[in-house]
Length: 187
Image 1 (cartoon, one colour):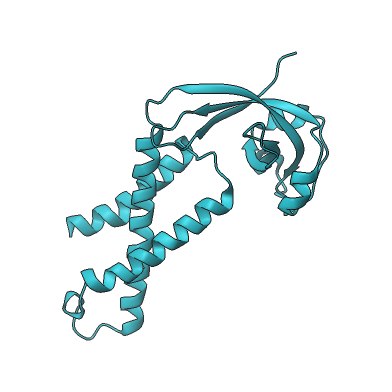
Image 2 (tube, helix red, strand yellow):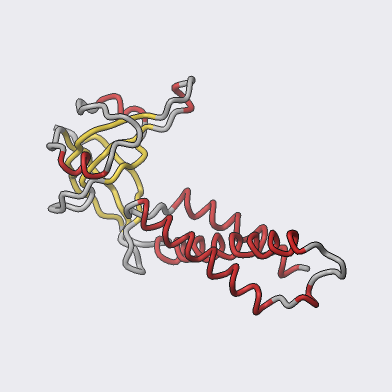
């Protein structure tokens, strides 16, 4: 029971804390694909780990499948969280000026609850654009074009550089940079 509670609550907690403090500086679809693949892997592994005798007698098959899916989700959260913490904790920070091509915000009615995104070329000299959440102050002071939510990646990559920001990133111990903050460039 303690092991199950640790995976269920510990996995979700560690995953959420690590996402907040050590967000990977990678393209979003990479994390989505890896996360979904991990959930499927652990779902399938649950069939080898938990036989039918592991469940209460008479438990409906749908509930067994829901347990297996939840197990996959919780173990994935735990592993991603532990990987993020191992990658980012205590690593040195680097600072670089990066080009900004556009910005957009979520549509929440209250500006205090919106998320402000800045589309930037985070890995110079690469032309690849990534959209990262930025502080409202940085967003408001940037004089770059506004784009619609869901602008295709090809369109963002083709846009010209319109401004710049200072990107503070952690040098990941396991090879993946993580985002510390986005700041205005002082001129």
